[in-house]
Length: 100
Image 1 (cartoon, rainbow, N blue to C red):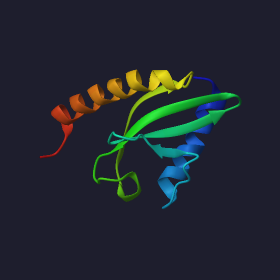
Image 2 (cartoon, helix red, strand yellow):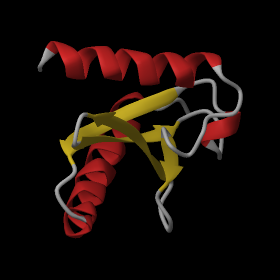
Image 3 (cartoon, helix red, strand yellow):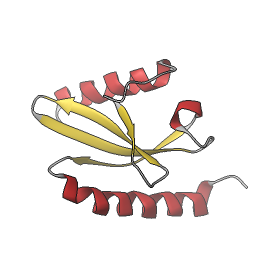
């Protein structure tokens, strides 16, 4: 991963870690799913990471989040496949690691 992209991810993740209210510019709920997208703009590219709150029903109430999968946004058409991939990863994680 390019250093510029890494730095921008660090910046956005720092905001998520330290701010009680995170602007929709950086995190947005994916309607109809338990997932949120972490939004990382770098120059003209838009990187997305699908995340989920694992200790609360809402990202804003969570103290733990799980980063599921990342992708370079090319179009809204790819969201369905990326959400399905995130759902598969999350289900595998819950089977393996989730607390009862």
